[in-house]
Amino acid sequence: MACNIEQHKMHMCALKAENSNECIKSLSDKPTVVCGNCGAKANSPDNVCAPQKLT
Image 1: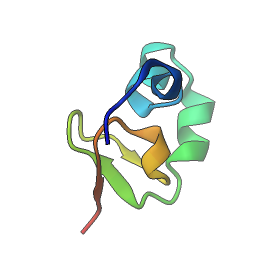
Image 2: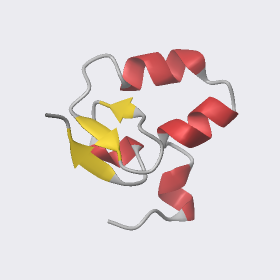
Image 3: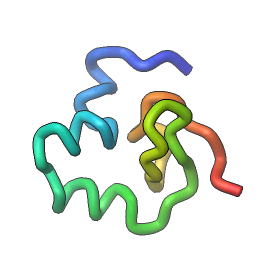
């Protein structure tokens, strides 16, 4: 899955750059995926650039 500009604004790395800590907390409180690029964990693959299942 390729990351595009529209999707990227809700990815963990973009939210971190904006200091959106409350949003990050709500999108990562029950992580199911990890980003293959930066290692951020998220509840949904829609919130990371390169989603990989957590093992």
